[in-house]
Amino acid sequence: MIKGRTGWTLIIGLVALIDFTAKPGETLSEALFRARHKHPVLVTAAIAVTVYHFMAGDHATLSRYDSYKLFTVLRAIHHDG
Image 1 (cartoon, rainbow, N blue to C red):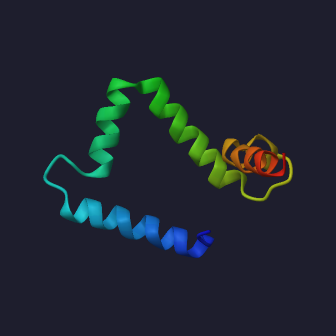
Image 2: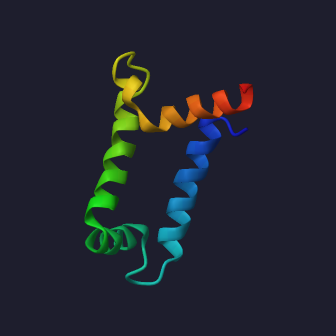
Image 3: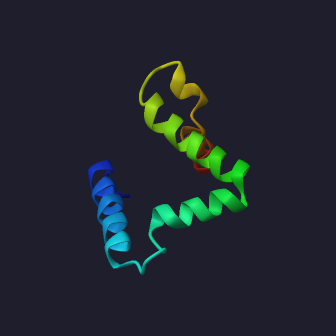
């Protein structure tokens, strides 16, 4: 299992590496813009869910509605059952 700090280091490092080595027009941001143009509802929803996950943090009420935390709960139920 990857610890949080290691995960953040990997995410930031990988994003920097991809954008640094990308050909013109192929950065992650540019790919996101193209995807958002093609699938506006899906991509906007994914962004909103991710932002909410980061903003809710460990807030008792807000974190109840965190879709990513739901995955953790479902995983725990799956492993226990």
